[in-house]
Length: 163
Image 1 (tube, rainbow, N blue to C red):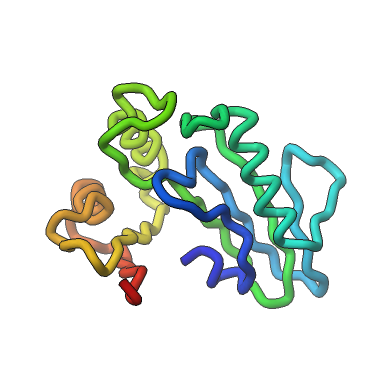
Image 2 (image 1 turned 135 degrees about the horizontal axis):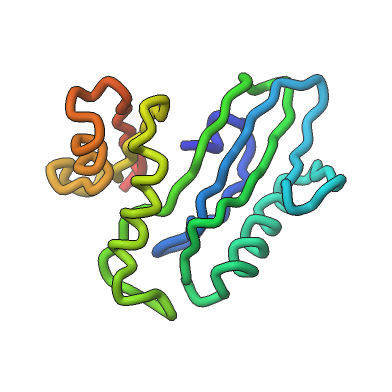
């Protein structure tokens, strides 16, 4: 979903929990297209495959390569003539069963991380749910309803329509 705002494929993909740290994505309208990470001062990425690789490497640097999580954000700026000035945050999805070296309380840790962001009044939530699951059981919608009972800050997004 976030890649559609940018018009480029740059986020890591895979099964299970892929987003293991918050990704603060700042879109900046600019005549030229490139990306910059806060942790790579002065380096401009023009190849968005390299952006994906850097997200993966920076995630593993803090969380380990075995599916650990961390609330420490990765800050990425994307400059492009095709974007609006906007800041988005990609957060880990809810998971209930720990894998790899994830802690036994992984569900609680992710929930706490999510709450740091979604409880802010200026936060607009994209509650993303796959089309092949029952919306009544959507963790994203449950959290959204908890922090935004009137739905004034929530947009429901259904993905994986091809499943």
